[in-house]
Length: 375
Image (cartoon, rainbow, N blue to C red; front, top):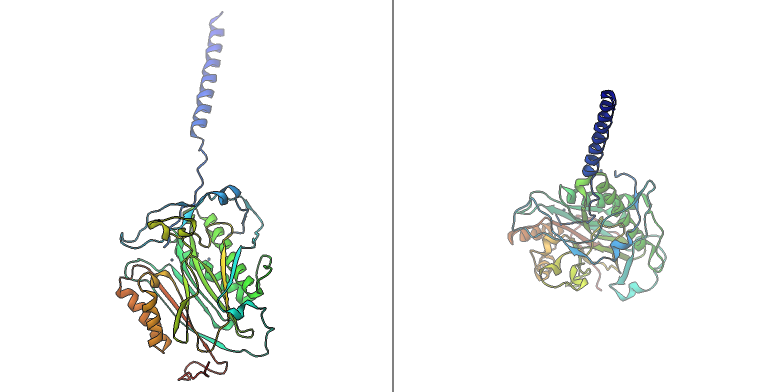
């Protein structure tokens, strides 16, 4: 073998070795598929169009309690949510799934078919609202919506890192308000429940999709979500429909009796005991669909309805809240007192309050006193 032959062979060997080294480095550098898990905390604008088919494996998985870091002080009560796998295929066409609804009635007469709409409203609703950051939080991640023109009121308490909770609650009230104002609801209507109740649930599902779309567009927003408590009055049908997800609440004061109309969705529903039992079991924006509780009622003249975030109810007992509403006839003063009292007890979370009064159809705010006929 000549020197020339030897040189050619050495060059070939060197080239093969270099190629093998290069390929080996590429294999070693190839990223491994990341485990998909949604980790959520509670804290309180158009999204990219995308839909996500429900993940059968994820929905079958038992909720896992997880905790992320929070940029607030250590002694702030953080509401946490159970989490499951979050891998969701995306498609260029947005699809709104029909959300599962659990429908119940608060008043026996609400269990019958709704009457046909009357030519005139049988009552009016007037709202007073306030939201407050509280004493321990760095920012307010609650949002609220007051739309007297369509008799719709919403409280949303957001959750998620990197200001995600703030954005999630804002997206939720924006989507629900836009749907109601335009009277356009995506997704098929539900059978067996009043149409307006179905529309409210579908509006929440639209908000759910908007939040997921926004989170998909920015990885730092992954896992953001929000609670929802929404009240939709129908003055021409004498009906009220309350939609509820999470631990924001709705109460009613009627003839001096103060009553909770919603029940918190917590991990206790899944048999979890101990401190983790108070963690949320559902929230809007976390999974492709969200189960929604709908409570139907028949409003009466003189009723007072309170929608609030848990920043109020964690600081004050139902008895204290009820006493404030019973003793204070001025709605603005009542709302302010509730916020002040919650802060006086520590104000560990954002506080949002909407107070809605049911009045005669010919009554206007400022025409005090409000005299109601005997019931």
